[in-house]
Image 1 (cartoon, rainbow, N blue to C red):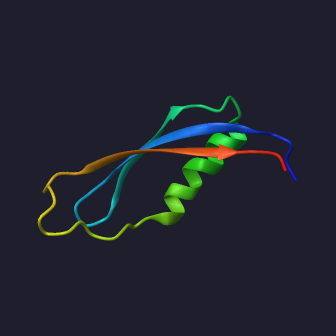
Image 2: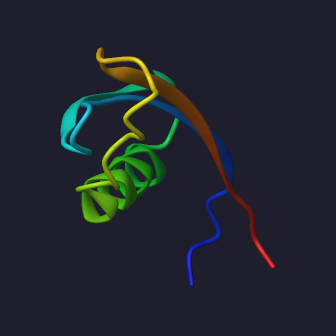
Length: 71
């Protein structure tokens, strides 16, 4: 188990068909291990469901915080 703790904010862009267009660390935890784990979880989650027909035709930009803590 890791004793590293911190919060990473990942900003990513999803296309209308659910494709992952881009991802970046918006706010680093200060730990490359945690930052990489947060980005990897977004990459493993892709592709996402397609957007509903009544949603915008453009891409959706989302920012998600990942909080890693020691238990």
